[in-house]
Length: 452
Image 1 (cartoon, rainbow, N blue to C red):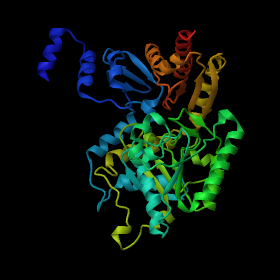
Image 2: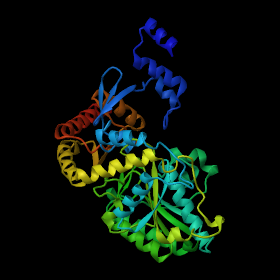
Image 3: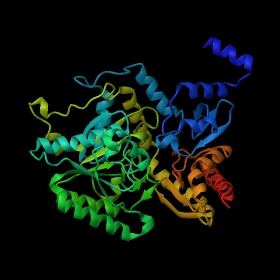
Image 4: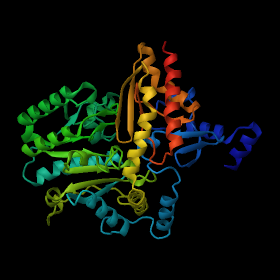
């Protein structure tokens, strides 16, 4: 390390330049064609504070996508920091097989209480894909333990994304993530997604298709998995709560589990703590991750109904749910999650978010009137719109060009294809909300001018 530092001094390299070159040589970055970084430099982030990230040269970037949807209460949040420092001096980790600890217990209790006790027995994992794997396995194994081993098929929606592991990819319908691994997958049935951009007819068609599939394959279907209210990685495709209520009724009628993937849409993103609350229903299995720790540490949780847990409760170890990993229920991650829940309670976050979302919606109205903007939409603190692009070659590069231009406007924004979305932390003040809106508009206008 000392030799590297001396070399940088001789070559007069900035720390950021050094970090970028070292990272390109040593790190395989996620969701990235690494060759693109020959022309698109990495951003060497040195620190974070509130909604802002700062690079090694002191340039700042508004984290308008919450660092892949995980950061809720800003970077270096003092209250989460304090909780973690206290936990660090007490217990950093212990295996959860055969042991337990207070953070894991309290977090499980509080999450169950938020569902009114309908869901509980929190099973901890490390990330969203792990939670989906757990839920899929639980559903299949539950039916097997219940004498219905033929129920081994799954249903997802078109455009759905549920993670990158093999089981999760099997219920994912985004080609760029799935197609290379298709020979490895147990493919799911795919029902049409209810897309609010296509009106109520899309919801009716989706429900009709699901009902027909259940009628013909219900005896073989273990579960249907969906993201309630917003299919995020599929392009922020939104649907009404009534669709969830109807799917719940169909699942009940055919003895099919409903898995709610609230990894991205939970923890207040849609306006309620759980997105399912808006439909007045609870799933059989609910997956949480991303924002549950406020963006501090990797953690996921699967909450289940009592009937599912009871199907595994037996003297026979073969009937137990033996899924595990070494860091299950890590005390530091659980403590960060507890501090996050504390913030929701003490700061009346859900009501505060409604006020902030209203201000952002108003601030985005001039952008919504742009002739190249289509389908400006909102669900809670999630905003999205589609760019109308005339040239196919421009559409292919839109996301990368928008990202680069946004950086020049001090913003971290990563469109999904030609869909621009905002999913900022909950800590923006009024001036930051206004700045986010007008700089998003400025970025969009600059990028679209190149399409003319």
